[in-house]
Amino acid sequence: MMEKSIRKIGFDPVFDKDSRILILGSFPSVKSREIDFYYGHKQNRFWKMLCGYFNEEIPESVEGKKAFLKRRKIALWDMVVSCEIEGSADASVKNAETADLNVVLKSANIKKILLNGTLSYDLFVQSYENLPIPYQKMPSTSPANPRYDETVWRRALDDVFTIS
Image (cartoon, rainbow, N blue to C red; front, side, top):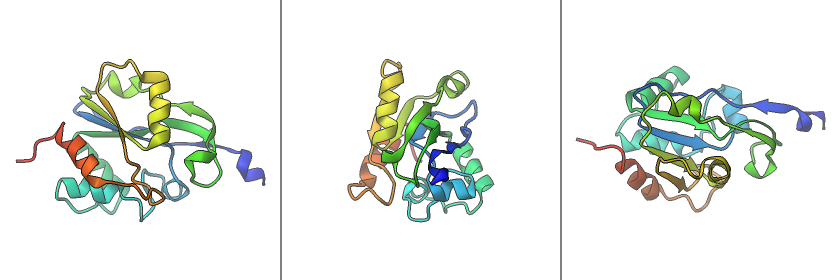
């Protein structure tokens, strides 16, 4: 019972000056918090979709995933940097502290922002609706989302990347 009221802290953003696209999730799942990196649940479709887009194998290590993101000019963060949460469900997020996206935006030339799921989109719109960067709500890659559609992700990535 005490665990429920303990504030959880998310992860630092992964980006560099060359990042061109920013993908924002909501908050790390229990599995992600266990491995201390984004999209750690084996059944989450994120890494399979993203690496598949570039015809690459999914890196096994956190360092390999960070190198992949930087090589492919992808910034990754969550809209919630700390909150109270029960388990992994976005619906249980309470007292959320949202990300200061200027941390990334002042250093990288972001061309598009993709919001992975409803909570990340809703929080983004509350604080950044007038940002002069195109943004798009994406179908959540969570295994709990039965309406996931990879073609939406592929089209959005095509807007930023050209594969030769």
